Length: 78
Image 1 (tube, rainbow, N blue to C red):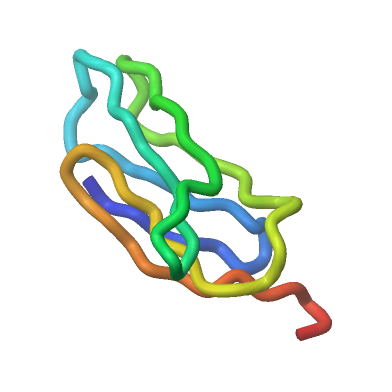
Image 2 (cartoon, one colour):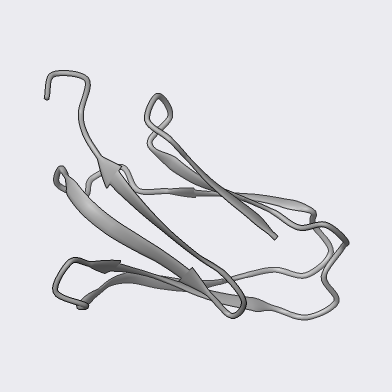
């Protein structure tokens, strides 16, 4: 699994190395460890885009069953 954050589209992109056969659960946490968003990625797709539009600027952590990514969300004017 590869996880990337796009500042331009304000999305976290998850790319699997092979098509998953089960749901993959994820959550987005703030720096204090509070869960901001959570959900699950449907099986059968190699790529998923998770919008973080609407979250305030700041540092976040994306966590899934098998991987994690720290990223900083900024608006174009920050």
